[in-house]
Image (cartoon, rainbow, N blue to C red; front, top):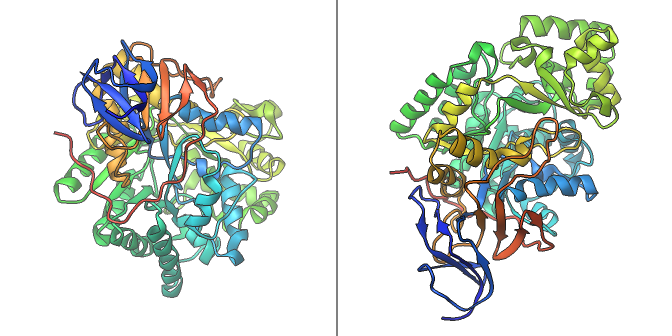
Length: 540
């Protein structure tokens, strides 16, 4: 046998299919896997002793926003390491309707504004998937696959206008989407609670999803409502995918707000019925009861209709603030009213770079400490931060999180928003939390089931044809972990604390994490996804 670059010996292999662990050695040659009988003693340049450990495929995080993480300072480097340290070797980015491409050069302004409104400066925009891949593929440790954001398409063609798109405008959006998908983008995403996506009609989204379906790539959606109207929002998503002939991926599925607690009993049953009727539908979830998004998303969508600068100018006016207060109480048709469904006491500041003392505290408490109304405090904080404020929303019930996580239709995600301050611990803890807490401690899933949700299932959904499985010839993305020690370290107070129990992470045949510490190897790249991605296989 030709010499191996690396041999992992003595461990139990969990290959990603859902099958139980079995003893085997895993070899790596030329960046590809070679599975060997246990104790094969194949010649290798480097040997990793995995006795007492399990060896799995590298994890695929199906919902992140790390494509929008720009800059090279120390804080951003720590943020980039967070998913890698828990075994994430590939991230699916461009979610919730926001991607940094494709942007015609003359339309970079609105798109940069869209990105900065959610993720803060610096905000980059790229004309094409190829340009994005060239920019992101420099010195990466793990891989990215990228969706095309509907909000980006709309900002590039229409801007933030609060109206339906014309037939010609939909045609231009479809053309941009078609070019990006043909070049290797992985699918279409929407964020239908966010501006400008909130302004789109169902017909507009069907037209775009039809383009994704023609490429054999999924329609991935942050539903128009995940709270009291979640069931009707799910019906819209099913209608879109069925009419378009596309696969459907429901992002970070949840039923948030007290009025929606328990609705996962019905939403999961609806997904099962849709699948039985022939729709290729799956979902994903992060294992926490708090969500995270931009503070301005807590306010009525008309406020940001003309972009961030106009929002900040308007929000300084007392009459506008009174209108905000009214709409939070009364609600608006088609708007997911998070504060109205929960309250400011559930909204915690995660990132406010110019006001670090606010981070970790609720809007209700911060407003009370200053003797002001919460709306006034929120508007003042947005002004002080030039619109760049991220929040946590403690709005889900643990029973719903567990129910979604246990469903055979569900993959795992982090929905990581990699920003400074006190970001959601899901960015650094989701995968380790499932393996430690929900597998070992709670017993909600078997270890092989959980690994399946993190590997084979997402790789198949997003057309990563040579990843997600430990099998001969597959890409050598591998995790070596201790099932008795794996645990998340990240908390709401220490959100970037690393996990325990991850012995080694390998990307493209090179060790990128060794003994819990990152190495200097940077083999990651942006993956171009070919057309006609295979359908997600059902587990036996």
